[in-house]
Length: 311
Image (cartoon, rainbow, N blue to C red; front, side, top):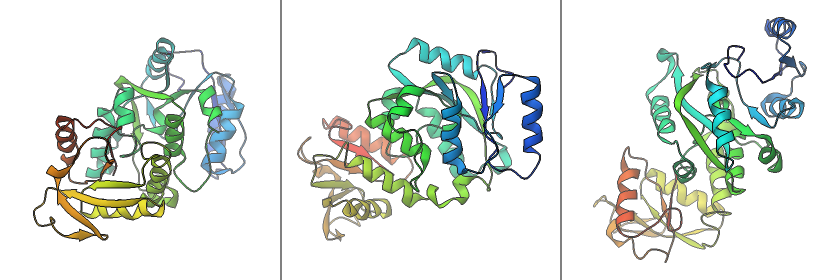
């Protein structure tokens, strides 16, 4: 961060109870650069450490960063510039690259590509219930909306994804600078690989919680497009929220005419009339989501008014 071309910033560090040489490194930085200061070395856990740093920071903009990731020198300048020029945007990220190459498996590389396709507020909002559409340590965001939604919550679910959902629910917009300004270190020891709060079930529970308060808030029943594994798991998840699945739609002739979770599987051509029933698109096959979106758009369906995509 010391190499940023944007110079008017402070770095608030939290040493979360380290037992290696972290404290010595922090003391060297704070001694030679007054912009760096430490909040302490008490073990608080990730969410506690994040909120401690938010409380200690002085500025109206907050930039997130993990100690083992890398920033392009222009990151802060370009992200602050976007926020200054677009007061309607509250969270700014950028294109990212996962590294080192040897540690990045195919699934993570697909996620990287998907993240880098979502640049505008409209595209990020559209895919918000597919996966977390913003790389958390790459963002710069406004303090005011962060504090208004309660900052980071330690509720056993992904603290970053939960924040994006709450900000979206509060009407905040997210966007990205169209440059690769952040390198995200991949490792099997990352919390996203080892902590249960980042398991698929926790992501799904967050999605359901916000879907029933948002795109599905006026629905008692839904249609699920996709009678495969993903569609069945979503039928179960929505059922826990008291929502009934009236039917499934599918393109696979082997599935048509069967019943899944007691509901019939019908041809996708029976999508019906826009607005009569909300469609939850839950198909995991690569490229299928784009084809389904195109098909529904040609039939007059609008997203998210008439359908929402999940994963």
